[in-house]
Image (cartoon, rainbow, N blue to C red; front, side, top):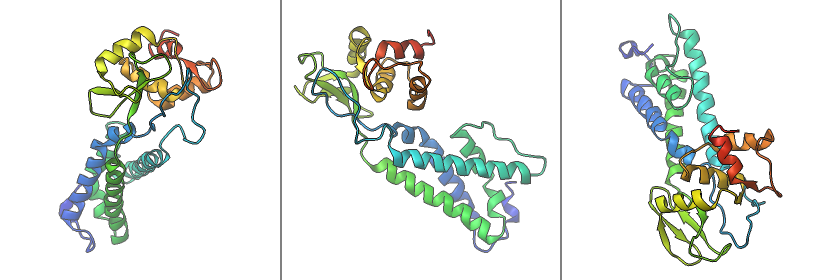
Length: 245
């Protein structure tokens, strides 16, 4: 129920209620940016293979926890709305971030509740907007986009900074357009051994992106089998991504 005319709580104003809605929509608009921060950058390749790092988790745990907490709270609020709104309530989508936007539309339901409920809702929206802002203000990690086509094999790796079109080799310092590198990956790297994180990046370059959780499930379910250690053939991952296997 989004009827702000019956707002009676003394602790939350109509302006506070509308700001809470704006904060939640702001978070929803940046959901994809948060997800892009999930995978940490890999380290430069110093040899013919790239073992998985032992000191770095496969995901940015801070961002992962933040995404989880926001989604769990949105689902809890949605569940309460489905029970309390006259005639029932259904979100347009059960997936994030649309679920969060649908919950935000009913901000008036929460801010017309007793003070302690209204205040908690507004503080939650404010606090998580602040936390998302801080998470996104940290400079994004450069992403590995394959070996340098100029350097001798195993000596140069290309990294690209998010939202840029040029990748730079950390060995020879040469830059290359990301589209040109994508073509190189397609032609030369299908049989390359990669970690799961690097496979995720390579699939994105090849324009068949899949999230890290899906790729990890391929490995857990033995659909993607390591060739040695924690290294997998990119060609097998491409087949799975394209639905050919």
